[in-house]
Image 1 (cartoon, rainbow, N blue to C red):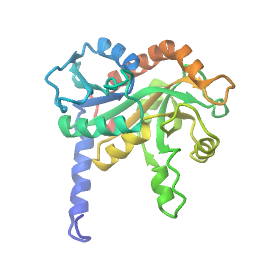
Image 2 (image 1 turned 90 degrees about the vertical axis):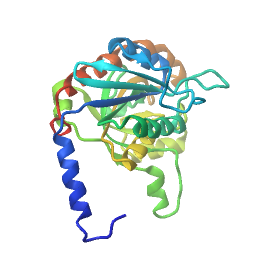
Image 3 (image 1 turned 180 degrees about the vertical axis):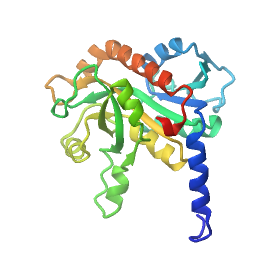
Length: 265
C-alpha cells in the first residue's frame, strides 16, 4: 500500500475515472452450470478454445468470440473430474474468477446464473434480478470484525441505466455452498436482507473487488425458498424454462452494454 499523502490515491482515482469513460471492450461471463452456459455459447456464437489460457489439468472451459463490438468470454468451471457433475460453489467460482481476470483482463465481469428466491421479498419463478449487493450467509465467525469478514458484504457495480432500460428486478444476493437452507443460514440471509440466494456470487465479488474489476450479478429464480416445496425438486423442475429466461436477459444486457462505457451503465 502506498503511504498516505503521496498522491497515489488521487492518481489511481483519476485513472479509474478515465477507464470508466472508455467504451467497454472485453466482457467475461462467469456461469456455474453447463445447462446455463451452452445457450449463451450458441446465442453469441462463441467457440471453445482448446488451447486454453488456463492450467492444462483444470476442468475450466473458455468460450470466446466477437459479438457486435464486444469481445465476449464465457467461463464455465466444467465438470468435476471425479464425479462428472457441474463444479458449482464458491471454491470453483473464486478460482475461475481469479484465473479469468489474470488471463483476460476484462473491463467488466457478469456473474450470471440461476438462484433461489424469497416470495416474502417479492420473488417469483422466472424473475430475473440484478443484484445491488452480495454477501455470504454460511461463513459464521462470531468474533468481532471477523464476523464482518465472514459476511463479506460487497456492492455490485452500479448500473442504474441498465436496470431502468431492461426493467429488471433489483434485490440483494446472498451466497452459500449449500442448495438447502439451514435455520442458521436463514437467519443470516434475513440479516443480509436478501431477495435471492445462490452458490457463487459473493465468491466472484470477493475476487473481483480484490483485483478492482467492475462486476454485475444477474440471477434468475428457479425455486422459491420460502414456498413450501422441496428445493431440489423445484429447482430441477424449473431449470430449463428459467435458463431460457436468463439467456434472454443476458442477451439484452450484452446488447445494452455494447458501445457504452462503464459510466453509461
